[in-house]
Length: 148
Length: 148
Length: 148
Length: 148
Image (cartoon, rainbow over the protein chains, first blue to last red):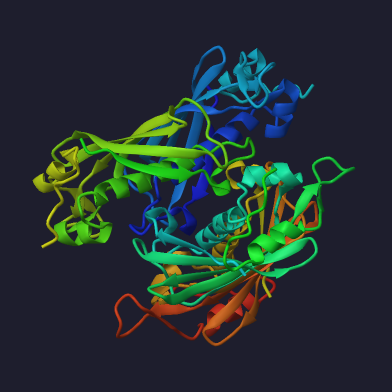
């Protein structure tokens, strides 16, 4: 699987009165990191929405285990990859490392979702395109999706 | 002018490693407080959007002065009213009080905005309806807008 | 078990461009709801910290399943209770209901944590006081903890 | 004056149901951008706190004008510099540009604050060290502050 890595500095805005990252902030990091992982397909979020007619990739389940706290000014590495592919869903796994040690890990289960054909405002799960699966399954990151 | 008052408890989520409210959180409180003030017209946000065909009330200017910090678990009172009415804009003034003393005050200048008739995705300022002005200018809060 | 219920209106600030609650916002709601649940003991967060010498109740694991989205202006009910008590940890279960139907449920596993006696800035799990367990296990909510 | 520039991609987490950045999010960007500007002195936030014995640089006034909205996936440039130096306060000016055009500008007036010598938990304004002023006034960015 293709693993996307980001290096981040923990911001003041992310920390609580205990001086550590307020845990929902990690889920915001997960969300953005999934975005960056999917950009490794070569498509920006808006290009992906346009090309496949999806409205997004809503989260249906999330989980995280916190091993050690991160603090303001810590440098952390976020590693993200798709751990499992279903037909119309997939699970993105995230690990956040501090000085090389695991600070927390977690996952987001998401659905590849288009507009529901009949009910306005509702969504309908669609099969994840094979080229997306192929691109993010290529550990070398050399299988971009053609824009059109 | 009609002054809307809310009593809030400062949440852990709103505080930073200095143990005080992280200042952008006050702007979130402003935004929500403006929502509650406009509900005093008798219209929910969605009812207001529907009745007048507006897309919202985007902020064009904001400012705040911080007098004393608020901390986790503090009880505060938020007082909000429309300070000035323009033709298609208005200024909401907010004061946050702690134990009766001013902690901060600020304002949001907002526009009464509809969908632009020609440019998709763009907005166009519209005249604030007289009944909205009248309702929020009535200090007794007894002039609701008819939903019709 | 004592179930604490809160009624909330979904705020603009909590919603994303899909018009639904951005999922990490639910975790912020969980965090605050745990705070209100523990206030049913009769102790405010600061009183609890002072009485028992704890630094807080850090989260070690979190999870949530999303069944249906909530939108701006929706009224939701948050139900929270302690599902399991360990010696020095406990699991708070949260359910968020919209018009009586489940929108999502989730949990936070937390530790009852004091200052570590030897390592500055580190924490050490402590046994949850029996009177806290008793108070939150009383479904009638009539067993407050003495402030003394 | 030294101008610090950051290039950011607008995140899903920062946008509201109108599809644009929720305005308090810009203040979070201001806060973080001030942090990066002050790192141009050569001192990390924690090194600065340690070297000068300050507890932080709390904001006493803030303001912003919004010219055009930014949307999810937009690339923006944040330009930050100290516009005015007082004895113990200073004003950081921020401009956010989209495709080279101004999207918004704003300021934060902050205080260089140490622990109050007599009142626990209170802060006391201190004179901004001359070397900090010199470093951030040098447009070439070549005047770092010595760590000790």
